[in-house]
Length: 235
Image (tube, rainbow, N blue to C red; front, side):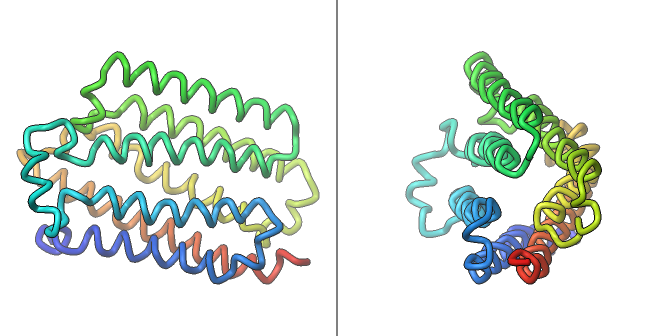
């Protein structure tokens, strides 16, 4: 299992991300007049973040990687901290601000996003080396809280509206439900991320397995939601 994960973890994850992004592009015409188009942009953005973030393993950049040895950007922790942990949170704040109907809820989401960005900048300024060595627990957990708050507000609105009668037709439902499940599955592992090191390969393998399964589930649900909801969006 260890060799399999070493060899195929990134390939499988990236493949399922590409599948979701390509599906979004194929069905873009169905969503171009809805906020869902921004989610398709985000899926494409995710693919590029993953692609560039794996620069340490690019063989054709061996010369560059040699020059990066011993520098803060030798590893890709900083890239994913900025462009995934912070970047994805900013996107979800923007996206839910588009789909939430209650002005009070939109204000809550907007100000939560502003507080998150400001606190993230302060954290990086105070502990600049943390994002370069993979110690981004604060960013990860505050990101989770903001995103989960957006999801909860969305579900509350659904429960209070007539949309509850046809919730299964909405792409936003599949996005929100999937995010909620993904965070519930992965959060316990993130709490123990300090054990993610070569001295405890049992935990490393366990974390890889959980995240691989969680990512396959998440992007598969996004793909399904894009396909299924496209039949309903014009109705």
